[in-house]
Length: 134
Image (cartoon, rainbow, N blue to C red):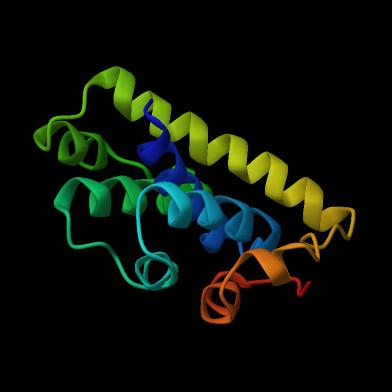
């Protein structure tokens, strides 16, 4: 999976899980490499306008919050936008891995690194702080 799609799927799962640690870390990558900070802040709450990005993020959120509700229609929607079976699996694995890591961090009380206060614009940091505070 390319880095951009991985980061979008990861951000979607992390925000759905209310994992500030992962939302901030992966939001920073998106803001540095693919989007403006304002665009990343919006992605935390608003689906992207690009139909593929929107479908990937929607699917990743569904994997994170209600994987038992994934249907063939969800998969077919991604495939109708040009994703292959391998691409769909990659998004599923990225979201599922995020669930494991995010839940582990929260269960151990791990908070986001304080260095992010200096690395990210305040508005972006605020938008990505969806759970534990720095």
